[in-house]
Length: 69
Image (cartoon, rainbow, N blue to C red):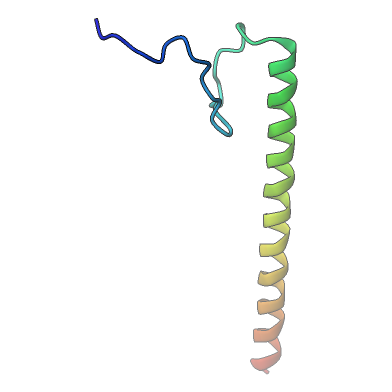
């Protein structure tokens, strides 16, 4: 067995330190609320990125359609 000199120190949580499908039974209500908020923020970020890419694609498509006639 390896001795961990830092075992008594509180561990810092990693940003997004969870994975999809992880067991949630040991989490407190506060921890669950934090995860929900983090995931909602990530969903907004993903939707914004998707919207930006969609606008770029539409602009490129319109540009090349105009040039092909």
